[in-house]
Image (cartoon, rainbow, N blue to C red; front, top):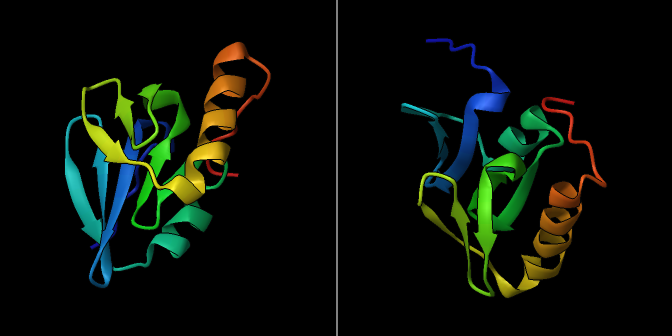
Length: 104
């Protein structure tokens, strides 16, 4: 089965086993791709918060040392390794310093 989605509707991606679960604004579905493959397909506008998670930067509401909270209240793990990059991207995006292009 093939899906065509608007990347701007994608809030987060979670990897497990040999697939990824993509969460859209109002539904979820699974794809048989690795998180690295999905990350390449999505392009800029998404950031790896943890080895098993990608988050749409525009859906981030807040960030702590251990997790990212999305606009919908969902909490996504944030690894120590990725904290600095995620924090910088979050600050730059919300300051308007970065213009993210989805799917590029």
